[in-house]
Length: 115
Image 1 (tube, rainbow, N blue to C red):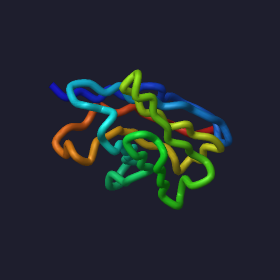
Image 2: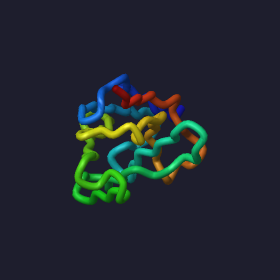
Image 3: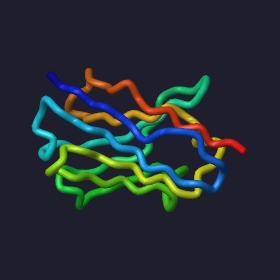
Image 4: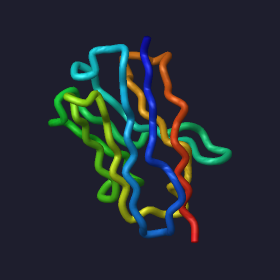
């Protein structure tokens, strides 16, 4: 069955970096767009970044552009989110998602940015 397992979250000081990973299984990963979303405390879930099937297309929401980088390794069925220059407002649970598989979400990985 479809599984998405996020990891790599944690606590970091403002200005720091984290690299999130999402291991996918149960579907043909290399053929699908993948996205990272986040949901902060008391907020709606929001899109963060998108990557095309072979990695040549990427798109970022304005609030992370220039700070976050999405990438993927199709040989490992894994999508990554490199997060640099983190801000307290980046504190959220982060999820990966395949738009073509709308019913499937992982458990998320918590990112906390504070001093």
